[in-house]
Length: 72
Image (cartoon, rainbow, N blue to C red; front, side):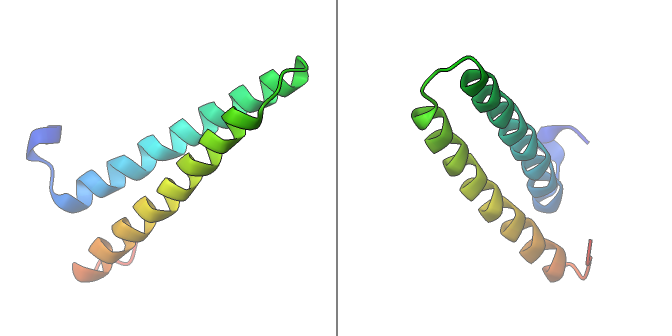
């Protein structure tokens, strides 16, 4: 299915995967900045926000899976 035709559960699963990738990229950026002696406060704040959003995305996915009887 294309993104336009995906079910709510498929969309939630895609969002989690995309969110995990964003968090990983941001964490790598924080590490690179820190390694080069840069102030990472703003980048770390953004990472914390991304991680909090990812927790919400995972919870939403879990609720959808439970509603469909799909315990993955």
